[in-house]
Image (cartoon, rainbow, N blue to C red; front, top):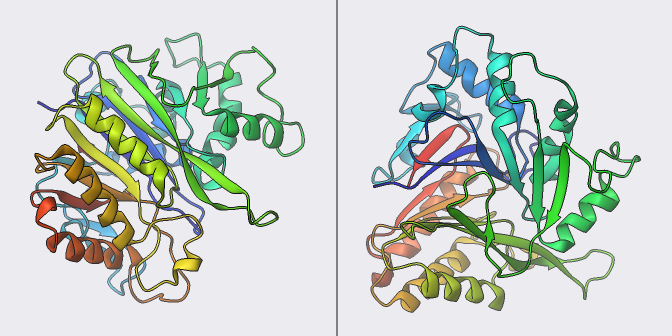
Length: 366
């Protein structure tokens, strides 16, 4: 039985500014509440409203999506999503059933946004926090359509991220200081590395944060930039998913794989959402702290070897593709996914692993 609903609000890594990384998570089939948590905040209420508008217009086509890389303006979902991965377009029915769809789209979009009680931020780059920041004033407005009088949100992150958000975003210069120490409704709390944190929204979920490297600083090339990965586990049935921010290949990823193998039974790792920003034809020096298809496959193979029993049935969902201006005729997401599948087919250890690409508006049921 599935454990997680994963709604892709934002999938890409720039440089296009709309719908960058943000994943909404809920327990599978949760009814009676619109509460959710998000990993990263690169997309927000605009994307929520757009998805609801597509549903309200009955414009959803389960097999075709818009695409500005092709003259037809359309893509086939089968080019992006493995048919073995349970998915649907739009919000899960368990969430839609909580809404009065006769109300204006904006009203319902605000209600869904208000239901996001926790953000887990991988790192403070703008493509991972932009919408969360822009949406933050909504917390300070009373909502006559809401039954929840406390419109609170808490941002959770490792200290290097929370420090940057406090000092360089909510500082009365870049953005109003809406995070006065200890104040509501917008709060921020540090997580401890490799220490399980119990979600307040979904108490049977424990969330463990791991630091990862994400390239080097421009001003001090010898200094590393840090990002994070989160392992989210249901304590009742031990099912888990892993979600990465921006990440480069090095020894820190190995620590995450070892944690998963030590704590998640074989077959209970439902999905890994991990970035692969550029295709293999890019110069490795221009990866800037990201993964390429060859590097990604190497890492998934390492995890498979640790499990020994293999990873058959695991869904690996690719995130954070960057749209390059150097090849405007070919969708880089298709290029990257095809390269990944080609390399995976060469590795018997990866037999049965399903590879897909994140698309905005898709809900994965895992």
